[in-house]
Amino acid sequence: MAFDSKREDLVVLINSYFEIYQIGEREFIGKVREPLEINLKNLKMALESYGYFPFFFKKKKIHMLTLIPKIAKEKKKENYWINLLLFILTLFTTLLVGSFHQGGNPFSKITDIFLGIPFSFSLLAILGFHELGHYFFAKKENVSVSLPYFLPVPHPLIGTMGAFIKMRSIIPSKRALIKVGVAGPLTGFLMALPITYFGLRLSKVIKLEEIKYGLSLGNSIIFSLLSKFVFKNIPNGYDILLHPMAFAGWLGFFVTALNLIPLGQLDGGHIAYALFGRLKIFILSILAILLFLSRYWLGWAFWVLIVSLLGLRHPPVQDEITPLRKRDIFLAILALIILILSFPPVPFSMGR
Image (cartoon, rainbow, N blue to C red; front, top):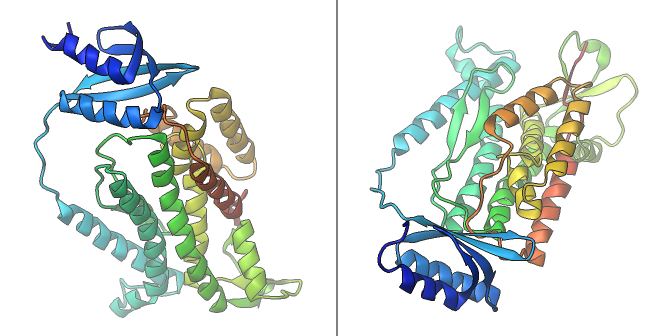
C-alpha cells in the first residue's frame, strides 16, 4: 500500500474536512466540507504535517484529493552570479544593437557604445520590471522562484530574446496563478507607457522619400494613441522616425502582447488555465486565429511552433477547487484589455 501504518488515522483526519465517497491508493473522491475555503486550508496544513503534498481537483460537482509524499530536498545555494553575468551580457548586446541603430560602430570606435544607452536602458527597464512583477507576486504567494535570467542574443534588431524566471514550486491556487500571471505584463506595460511617451517626444516626423530602406512597424492601439497624442497631425507623405526610446517602448508593448496570448506556458496561458482549465476548444480557437494572422506576418506561425514545443498542456496548480473571486476576474479582464491594446496584428513589414 502507498500509506504507512497510520493510514487509518489519516483517513479519519481527511474525513473530518473532506466527505469521502471513494478511497483509492493515493486518491480520495468526495467533497470538501463547508466552509470550503477554511476546510481546504486546514486540510492542506494537516496533510503537510503528515508528510504529504496534497492536490485538490474538481470534476463537475465532485472533488478529488491526490496525495504525493513530500521529499526532503537539500536547499541549494543560489548562484546569483549567473543572473548577474547574463544581465551584463544582455546589457552589452543591447548597447551594441542600440549603437548600430544610431549609426555607430563600437568595433571601430569604442565610444560609440554610448549611443546605445537610450535603447538598451529603456528595453531592459521594461523587461526587468516585467520579470520583477512576476518575482515579487510569486514570493507573496509563497512560491519558490528564481531571480530573472536575461537572454543575451546578438539579434540585429533587439539584442536579446527577453528574460524569464524559474518557478521552483507548485503554484498554490488558481487565484495565485492569476495574480502571478498578470503581475508581469501589467508592470511591464506600465513601464512601457512613460518610456514610449518620452521616446515619441524625442522622435521626429520626416518625409517618406527620405527613407531609403528600413523596417516598418505595425501599430498597436496603445502605440497609435500615444503617437496621435504627441503628434497631433502628420501630413500625408510623412511618417515618424522613432527615437531609440520609442522603439524600445514599441518592443515593450509587443513583448507584453506576446506574453499575454492565452496559450501554454505564456502569462496569458496561466490566466486562461485559471479561468477555463484545459478547455480544448478555447486553445484550438487561439491557435486558429494566430495561424490565420500568419497569412499577413509569418512570425505568428513561428510563435505557434515555439509555444507548442514548450507545451500547450498547462501543469496543474495545487488547489483547483477554491473558486475565483471578483477581484481575480477583474485582473483577468485587465490582462485582456492590455492584450487588446498592445497587440499589433502585423508587427513588421519591409519599408522602402
